[in-house]
Length: 109
Image (cartoon, rainbow, N blue to C red; front, side, top):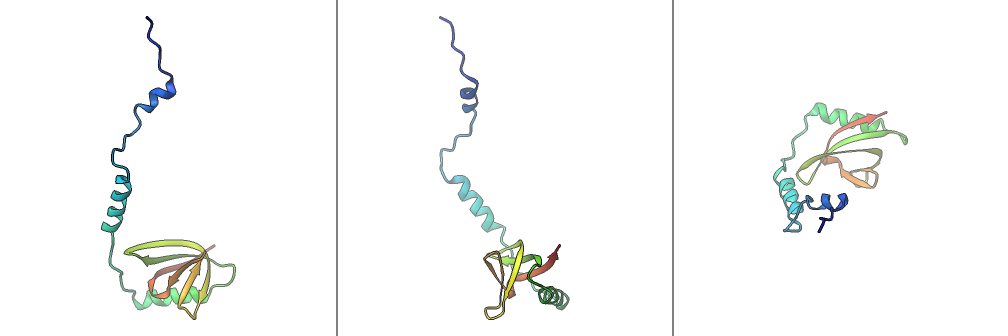
């Protein structure tokens, strides 16, 4: 009796990873994310002046890059900004960032 060859597509499947514990990878990534948390740093007067200058020079078509602090991490977002002075918030693409959490602002051309 001749041996029947396994199709190539089926041969590849035998080497696919096996996850006996579903959700383990997600839990490990979450733990790593929490472990990498940092404390919020303080801004010096020079940095505050730069941020203020860049925010006051914004117009409707300005695209900016904002480095901000959220949930123990520094994050960066790029987009068109709107300043909501009543709430002390900078809004970029429906993401609200408190003025106190802004670490750096650059105008992108």
